[in-house]
Length: 182
Image (cartoon, rainbow, N blue to C red; front, side):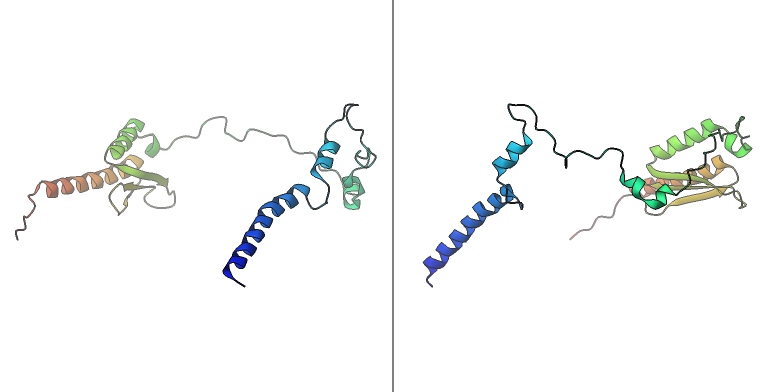
């Protein structure tokens, strides 16, 4: 075969695919013409199409009723009434938590000023230090952690660690950089 005949054959196959595949998709697997499908689905001038026997749902019979395990099953027991599970009085706050919420707010605001991207205060009632505070600061890889029986003291310890790191960074930045000469 010559190059021209191969090129012609490829063109015919491509054209057949470009026209044939969409035509098959329009007709569908059933082989009905698209116009016949549209005519059956649209109402005629005489009014809407009447539903045949097979289109109408059977009334009074459900698939669930035919299942013997459902027919012979007992009804669900009545559910208990919903009741409020919150205490009538709020729980008594521990002294460690009530210690100056304004102080804690100021400490957390200062942490955010210093670049804290993540912080978490956990309570561990079974350990000697009841509260542990974890913090991450932008630009610093190591996390800052402290534990103390008082929540604000744990936050203050982490805050002092971060401020000390900031002071060390400022002092090294203020020092003159060495100059390399060629």
